[in-house]
Each structure stands twice: as C-alpha cells, then as structure tokens.
Image (tube, rainbow, N blue to C red; front, side, top):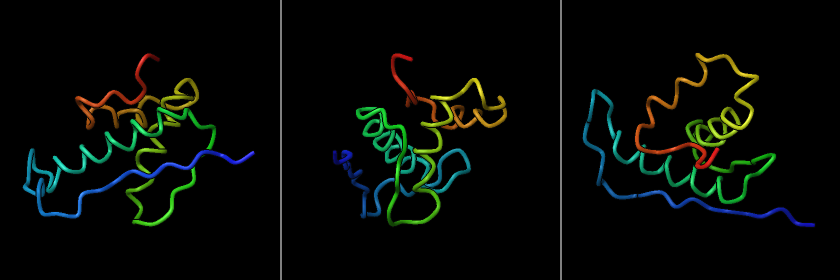
Length: 93
C-alpha cells in the first residue's frame, strides 16, 4: 500500500510580508500554516515526512500531532494555538 502524498503550496511573492503584531510576515506565515494544517487534517495521518524548506516546515506537523495526542503533552507546549487565532488546528475534535 502506498501512503498518500500531499503538497502545500507556498507563496513566493512579496505579499503579506509586512510586520504585524511585532512579527515580520505574520499574515503569510499564518496563511501558509493554516493551509498546511488543512491538508494534514484531510488525511489524519499517523506519521508525516516533510521535505525541503527550513525548520519552520515542521511547525504544522508538530502542532497537528500535539493536538491529536494532547492528553500526553504539557499545557505549555500547546500554547502554540494562541498564535494561530483564526485557524482551528483540528476541526471537529
């Protein structure tokens, strides 16, 4: 059996790079993170492999896993949701 493969498109333009709430490019980062979480949620994977990019490509998979096994993770780790206002990490759970 072949596991599903999904790609999350990322913006390559200069749109959304302005500083907001003291964070550079917050708008585009939240948009892309929301798209990644949406794609991940469509598959409900037990494991995720990320290819390319830098360390921030792991934020969505780590966040997804943190909320799927939230009972095992300290509350301090889950505070990432505060950053993602407007993007439910796992809908319906």
